[in-house]
Length: 212
Image 1 (tube, helix red, strand yellow):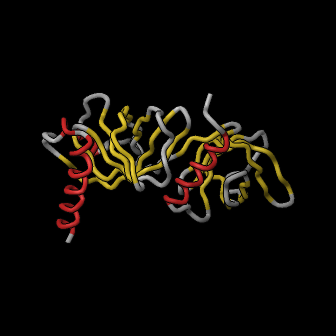
Image 2 (tube, rainbow, N blue to C red):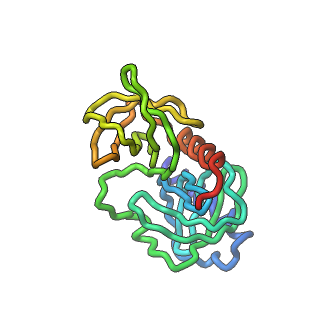
């Protein structure tokens, strides 16, 4: 069954890319991946799922439309980045060519010093931190399915339970896991679904406007 799904996926990608990118019909290898990643641009960071890759490019699953005519870079979980050239986008899917030659084996193996590190979306979002009867102001710097990072002048304790509130976010219950100066790492009591996180990040960044 797995092999049938793999062949179907490869056939689908071949059909999608052949009409749009005839120069890549001779690409020697195509690898099914199904791996979370993000597309980085001057307007924000957008979560996606890499469906497959070849030496020539990748196809991805999307959870919202991408900004038009904006250069995009694929960033994998290990931090590797690949500038892309957009080829097609439709119905929650998109295909890209690599702007520069890419090492397919490195993409597949994705070596990293971080064990199973979740994809993080970098933000610059004002938020309120509540604990007990108190509330303090902070800035949410990044967000993943399992947690996030905030900066606040308030001294928080390790393992302290807090709640995060911000425009565009559901209320997030979390624990403080680490502290470096005014920066705190958080783990959520209830993980976000990947698609939910993708849509939240998209809406928050769209409301904030282009980055400087």
